[in-house]
Image: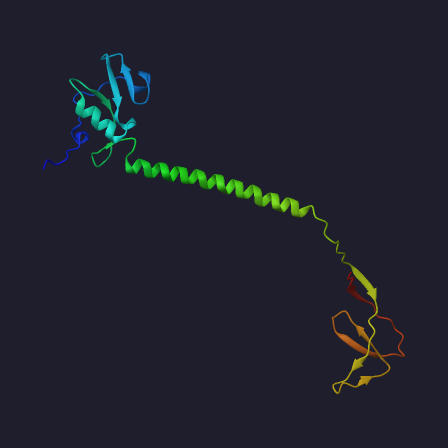
Length: 174
């Protein structure tokens, strides 16, 4: 049985042309060279099958343009490495687009939530004496005393006949 031989593996340029590809008339696959009066085919702009058919069915002189990889193979439009790079680029663009859309909608949710009325909380210093009963360790109330909070944050019991009023800063709760 005959073994398949890749026609692109034997492609070699006998004499490189000095004409500029960008100055030639045509498309990305085929352009006309004014210097040699021939069509120049871009193998890297074709699929592998199209490039193989062109090379194997060419009669006479064939002018081609191509990119060769480091491993010696010719880069075609549908090569696996190129497809992988294309998929990676598409994936990055899709991820960026999805992130933008999700960011927009999450920001929209925050905007609508901020328009809701929230009960107002007020904080401030309330000047009021603390009063209450003190209880000893036996849970018996100690009479004739009032409970006072001093600036250290401690509660102090003072006899009730001392009518000295000590104010304590307390938060006003609503």
